[in-house]
Length: 176
Length: 178
Image (cartoon, rainbow over all chains, first blue to last red; front, side):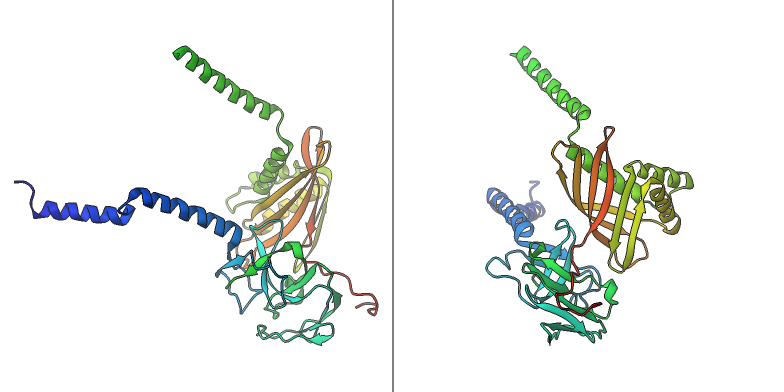
């Protein structure tokens, strides 16, 4: 006598809510959650490191507070290339530098009139949008080093982190 | 059966207590160094609500983590090299920072401790991050801390910046001054 259309509707909504929350088969849902957590842990700790860009040295290519990822497998089959935007570690991977590779091992790099020169030849850099007046004398890049610099060269040269990064410090290539 | 269970629990509790007592009396050098670094970061940090007595007390306490002849050589891009020698100069610098800045938050990240053979000295590599309110960028530097065990305490004898990106020397044959 007490059961009516209202209690049926309530029971149906409870079942519907339960299905959304834990699925039709709770055991299968639990397995899926465990697998998802395990895969996320592996992917975001060892393969794609999530990063938040901070600072102005990579403007206008990367703006501050943007979320990005570092692909740690990018240099498994080949070495870093000119133009790659890479993450360079300090003591570890909690804080990293984001820079662009413009000089490769063995090359000589210099800046004249704000323009980068590799082995004496001017380098075409379409990603540099702001004016630059840097003057940096020629520097030899070592056999296991890469010359890295940010895209925002309108900053005073002394305030801009740039220079030769050892290969072991390059954690991976910035994904997006 | 109940007697045995009780004895086993008692044995377990005694074992845990013995372990912690052992660790308290003979602390692991690496853990001790990490703990002291944590304390250094806390004492180097300060908020805008720190009173004058607390300022002086914390600045003085910070110096006790360094040896009397400690040297600190820190530099960052766009900032001149800072050299501090001895506890007295360190105290003055710590007090000056507290006078000139409203607050400062110092963190030590990615700490790696390498103990020398004999476990009487250690080198620590870490990333230091300092946030100053009102400044757009954080100050970030990779540092090497050199520790020495002096009269039973792990004291910092030297701090120096690691150049993550090196400028390098000009190639041979370049004209002088280049």
